[in-house]
Amino acid sequence: GEGRMAKYYITEAIVLKNQDFIETDKIVTFFARREGKLRAAAKGIKKPNSSLRGAVQPFCFSCLHLSRGRELDLITQGRIIEFFGYVRDDMVKTLHSLYLMELLDKSLAEADPHPEVFDATLTVLRCLEDGPFSPLAVRWFELKLARELGYALGLQKCILCGRGKAVVLSIKDGGVLCDRCNRASTDNLIFALDGELWALLRDLEQKDVSFLQRVKPSARALRVAEQILERHLEYHLGHRFNTKSVIRNLLEDK
Figure 1: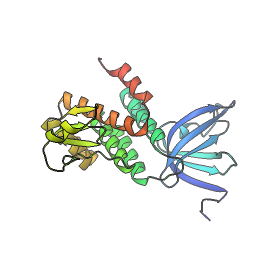
Figure 2: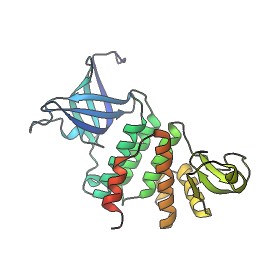
Figure 3: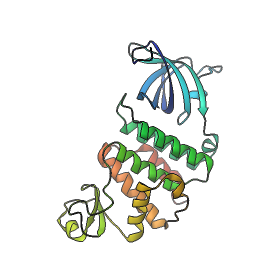
Figure 4: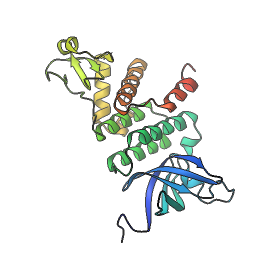
């Protein structure tokens, strides 16, 4: 049957990355809605006539046919479901999509399904494909990922006393603090909050992506929200994100 131990299986997956492996083969890391994050070998993929090549491009949404192997499963066939061609034609969108793939690769445990994260990933890729680049869609994804993996930021009220008005966000305490609790905190990663930034973070957490198209934050609120979420994810995942430094080097100050 369709159980985990069937010799062959078919899955719909988002490709996170592929790495060279002996001669004409690649190791493909993909994220499937049902199976979670897996790695598999794609043989002969660097040969010019390989039909698999398109289907295992990073951030491609593909239907993959696999056969189980001793160490690594083997991708035997692949069909592209969504290629996100407009994203690929745009360097800013491409880099941010690669950043999402890096986030997933560094945050997901092997074979641990997260259907909500899978759906959120497709939502953001489709949002980038269908409209102008939206940094808020990327911030929305970062907050959603953190929440689904169990380290949501507490944004509604002071995370320590539950009462006072939020004046800062503390990475170590995992949320917003009022003035009194801020003085008691030992966190050195503290971000000052004004009303706009606090409201923006709460919108990102509660609203869907289509709503975000209507939000027009100031450049400052956008920048600080990005810094907060990058630090929050680094703190919990114990990783820096290589794609983020590429984005900074290529796109900032232009």
